[in-house]
Image (cartoon, rainbow, N blue to C red; front, side):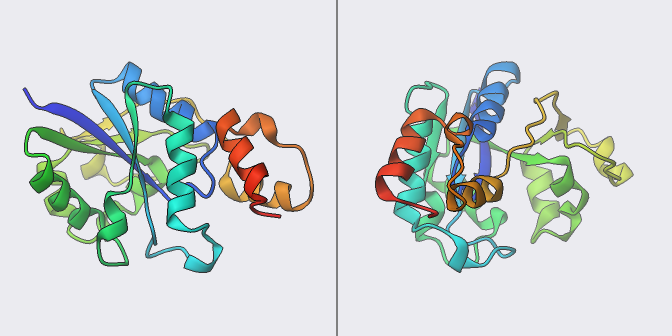
Length: 194
């Protein structure tokens, strides 16, 4: 039986306690053996100018999950052509780790637009998708609701966003409780987002 690795993609700009709670919940309460937090160097939907340098975001994620056996920071996309597409990343990972089965973690909001993803049919045929609930109404395609590779989870809903944290830091607010301690220390020490 192949080890089941959940891939939690994000810009993690910065990683916060919501990300860690979700990743750890999925590693502990589903059949995923590990969750890899994959730092995206450039999303097709986000402007690069708003991101910290790749190595700083990797360092933040690494520090956030260092004490968790089932959580790992991954920089697999750093060497891939941008913009990054999940289907390409999955192919690279399958080649590099043939003994692992890779699954995708996404929010209900992403599942709603999943049919617009590049090669989404291939992804769905070869990989499982673990869906985290979101607040509010989410109309999901009927095909996805009943698909055997799509698993709806009871992951806690976290209403903390990286943009809220960046803006709060810029405004001089104390948001230390929203970040893992090593992440807060690094951001403070490096004077990020001010």
